[in-house]
Amino acid sequence: MKSTLLACSAAVAIAAGAPPALANDQATGDPAGVKAAPKPSIEEELVYLRDIIALQTLRLDEAEQALARQTKALESQQQKISELERALGATQLALKEQGAAIFAVNGTDGYVIKRGDTLGEIAAKYGTTAKALAAANNISRPERIEIGQKLIVPGAAAPAVAAVEPQPSNKIVKEPEAKPETKMAAAETAVSPGERPDVTERIVEQERQAGDKEGMPTEVGVRPEDEDDRPQVAILPDVGGILTPGGTLYVEPSFDYTVTSDNRFFFQGVEIIDAILIGAIEATDSDRRARTESLGFRYGITDRLEIDGRFSYVNRNDRISGVAIDDGTTVFRELNGGGIGDAELGLHYQLTSGRGFPYTVLNLRGKAPTGEGPFDVGRDAKGIETELSTGSGFWTIEPSVTFILPSDPAVIFANLGYQMNLKDTPDEPIGATTIIREFNPGDAIRASLGLGLAVNDRLSISFGYDHSSFFRTEQMVESPDQNGNPVVTVVRQQPVTVGSYLVGGSYAVTDDIRISLNTSFGATDEAPDMRVSLRAQVKLFE
Image 1 (cartoon, rainbow, N blue to C red):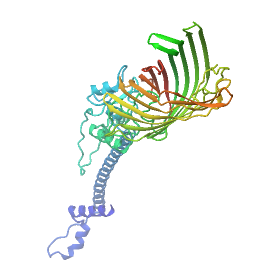
Image 2 (image 1 turned 30 degrees about the horizontal axis):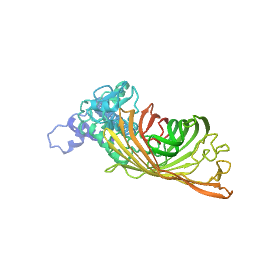
Image 3 (image 1 turned 135 degrees about the vertical axis):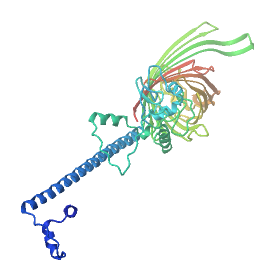
């Protein structure tokens, strides 16, 4: 700066002409006859120097003012850069947390859920799909939406925003300081990259491929694009279905009511022709009721492995009446029983992902004889039961496989299993002299086929048929002969077929509570007339 001022002073001096003192110093070299300039006075020199200093001071003030203007412009531009960086950081954070674009609500780019709305209806209104709508709003259960919830509509046009013309890099413009409220409004209306539908769709697709949305189900009946988008199927109980997501625990209280009635006509004697019977004839009518309260759990160890269990309490009531045709003798018995039932434990593994082939789930279920079996109850001297059992009395192991095929707007499911009923050696007397040494209940082949249909995002219904073929049952009975020697006799019962028609429904009350009502009606004589099961599924954590 000092050198600049000196240069300026020299230039001013040259432009104004040399002072008189310097002219006198050079006068000695002038030609003869040239008259020297008169020497200035001290007052004149002071005036001259003061004028020079004033001019230099004026130019210095102008340079400082220009520097201040440039500094202020740089500060303003730096402040604007900081604001843009903060807005960009906030946009990136919001985009990372939401995983979707932020659109205006209640305008052309968003929607607020009203009473009676479903994701399917909203998606159809905006020309998109329920799956895309659920993904854009991070809705893990599409059937569970709430009134007043704000939805982002992917693919809608973003609000129009005026383009900002960039300033040239070599031009510094002094901009007025914006008011605080103006800055806040500008930050709120700033356009983020996520507001562009094409960017939103690309981000959602990348997250889906990366597995960031694991466990998010689609609507019932919609064929998923990957294995994580598994359908929520209201499959009937004890059949098997899509597994619980990893780390999620459900508690399932339930109540079952079973009604069985039977009219039997017994004859022991000689049949001459179809209408003439000679011997002992008896007609019986039985009416059986059973109530079972159960508490179960279902836990997803991983997204492909699940464990479940169930503990129950059983109450039974049987009324049996009979009439002997030959002498008109009537018999009436009423039996009751109550207590802990058999405990069940199951393990399920999802084998396939549902792409190119139906979902395939391998099941292994076991039942322990924790309840009181038929050979543990009290009997009279004739071996007739005086109370009813609450359990089967034997162990059961059942491996099975479940197939689930989504086919919009329904889900087809099938189950095939083999029930192994392990034989038991009760060695219990059933009368004064008769002892049951061994009991083999016989195995069974079980199969079921059904269809699940989504009524809306919360309600689904199921129809199906369950069929079980039980092999021959054998009992090894020991009783004395006429001489008192023990004789072992094998009593065999013919194979039995049990078939039932299944009808069920499921309703999502909230995001964490689902209620299912399932019924079955007997299709064969050996099947219960009717069974009603009411089950609640409550999510504890995930």
